[in-house]
Length: 180
Image 1 (cartoon, rainbow, N blue to C red):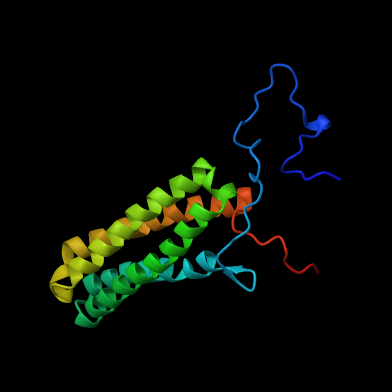
Image 2 (cartoon, rainbow, N blue to C red):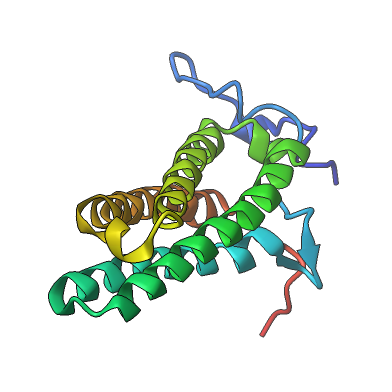
């Protein structure tokens, strides 16, 4: 049996007039297993939940500060925004390594879209944290709250694109998992 990545099957030949995706015909297009993993678990997939959670928590803390005026929520938002940025950098580094070292990921335009949006999100998270370092209470209204809202929107947009890569293209999914 020949390797499906290098051999073109006759039954898969395009019919006359049918469009052929030249990218999907490239060798290694379907090899998208994670290279940065622990025991088969992709590091990027494990890390992304932390900045997502911290971004949403920062927005929640800002709303609670706006509602109550309690300085505790402003300090919680400062810590949340800092952790969102730092964990986001860690997740971004592991995702960048995957993007650059796995050819099946690198050749897809959707991967680069996810990358660009994620870098923009990191910029917003860094700005949000930096803004709050000057004074947690003074930073919340209105700019901190607006930055948090923008960060949540970009997190949803980035997450949607990342989910599309995983669920539609099986990117970063281990093909050696256990069967039940």
